[in-house]
Length: 250
Length: 284
Image (cartoon, rainbow over all chains, first blue to last red; front, side, top):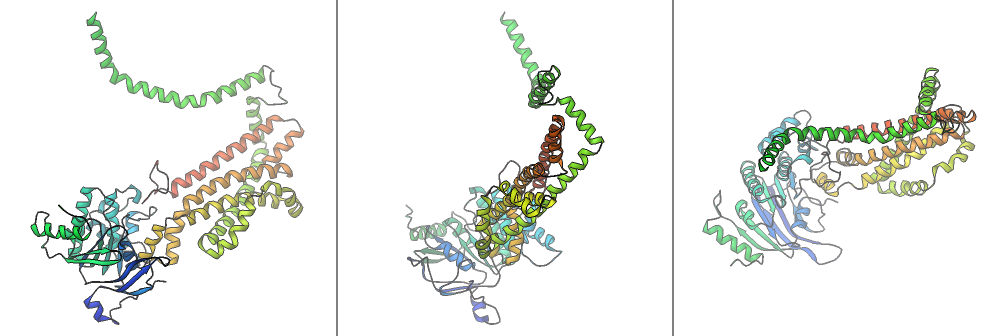
């Protein structure tokens, strides 16, 4: 069922060194209806941070589900690293396991699990909640835990599916800083699905706008980090992205 | 005059912070007690009616008489022996029900083929009133321990099966997706996601099952038995001993209450992850 060929370094070393993720001619339709993804091509370089924007129904979620292996590939070709991790909009922590047990869920490697969980929880600023039950966490804390669960796997490719959409504005700002910091340290390829143009411009190397299952805009963001909203180039890129999303910034 | 008003006002202001808490604690204490006041009053009325000869002891024994009888039944060993027999039947029946109910629910909850095979017959059988099987059970298994234990087992299997099956089938699909993206094996998913997620429903089923097991036992022990609380009560009927019958009733009541409390304690221990005052099924 999981039809994604894993790009094993030995077999396809060339692809591996050039791109972390390669999508070629990916088409996906549900029950013979119109194509949700229409002959889509996308590459993500190792360590590259790509933001995926698009209106509701543009195929963002379908692309992410395909890349994460939840949906099968029927038409087209997808290759991605073996080690991937996904952070969803909801934390999806198991409520019956303590936070640290959630972090190392399904991880092999006996006794040092607790130590590894503590280390990565410390990194996302949640060390003091390692023993808490997930349902007692705040929304921001739960997303931090979900990030920690993804990072502990040391993924070569990290997918973030609107991870901060359900958080309040202040918490979201903190989380964006956290993700920026984590990415600088871990340098994995990242695909961030978001509705938020500012979030894309703050974090990503490249913004990709999806429309009706095809890539409409592929915009490099050559700004130095840390980025400032007040930067005139930031303003310019912002209006370009909004334009391609069909929002006219007056 | 205005001065006095002012003074009293000041006095009440000064008094209020002191007397308020004491008053409310008194009130809440009174509320706690008042819950037991009316049952107590009823017992007192009952005793008074018996003492005054308004209620014939042939119909209903007086509370004092019941306490005396309970004590003497305990001392001569009748009550402990019969209680032991009844408890053993209930526990054996429940053990069978737990094993059967959990196994069947796992089969039909974890595999589609299993569901096709197991679920339909059980759904049909659960609509049968189990007590109507008593004559058949006597024909099949005679009048020994077997039909009594099986009756308890059969009655309490259904709530365990139904609740656990529902629990397994209603696991949040988002958690199952998450398990897939984390690369959990089928076995790990069952152990870490499905079974713990269905545990609250299993415990609900067990609570129903415990209640039903006592009901089954009462009937089984009164139809034909030579021991057990039910038998003790039927025996007392022949001698018009309403006091013994009422002792039996209280024992049944206490057993039901205690076992329910036991399951509640289990819920408290195993479902410690549920935040207080919140129902299960909260988004995570």
